[in-house]
Image (cartoon, rainbow, N blue to C red; front, side, top):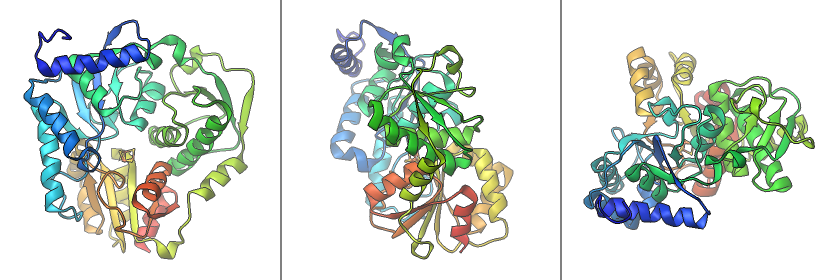
Length: 390
Ligand code: F3S
């Protein structure tokens, strides 16, 4: 590949990977079975990024393994309803077409593991979305570093990645123990816990792999929220959680433990709300993208009611298709809430469009404030719906 025998794009891809391998001291390449590529929104890529993708497509680049995409800047089918401009939509379509020409599946989601891209325990993969990377490593027990957009694409075109970091047993060992006090529940509760632990880890050890004790139990939805938040606030790509994640039983937790108290969690909760209920003019659920079970719950809460604020329901195209079949979409749309499929409230170009947002996601709070300039209010899933109806 490096010698150019498989075409110019594959050669370029292998050049990227071998440079990365040299920088990180990798001794070899490993085959990957799955790729997830970030940097899909035209607002992140711009013309320069689109140019790079077009060159790779024209140079004969072709995905050798299953590769899917992170959310784009708009709902591919429903962008007008979300107030996306014609010009942005045209550019976003050009991006998706370039990926499609390379055989990348244009399912745009940060929960690829709920949409047909589900690696098994121990598999080497190359994923880029930070929340999905944390979920794949920790909850599924697959092995990936946090790739950038170009290195993930390069892995797709070659089916390889350099073997360093979290691909190696020694790098997956826990270096810090966190003991959680008190009961945590809900997507909001787990996101808030992720913030409290992530910030504590950064102060204490830098980006060490944590071994987390005391949580007891967690649902898929709670774990996806926790992963998104821990990756956002702690830069964490792997954790082990006693009794919950698959590698935890094989690992020995370091003796010294740091306590995360109910007070720490409460402080983290308070820090994520700076807007009063009266200021909220935007409501969003689905960071990370909603599961079918969450959409079903939403339909139950919205049945026969009318929302009074702009309300985005963000999810993947496959989850939406199931929601359509089950009649959930009809109920949700009849309430005035809008599906924002393939995209989310962070990567869509909505800077300054709203004053303040209610969400159950600690990660969405971080980016809505930092990227869009919105005030934020974190609530439980059901309370977010209550805000939309108020
Ligand atoms: Fe997914 Fe967007 Fe949140 S990519 S994790 S919904 S910021």
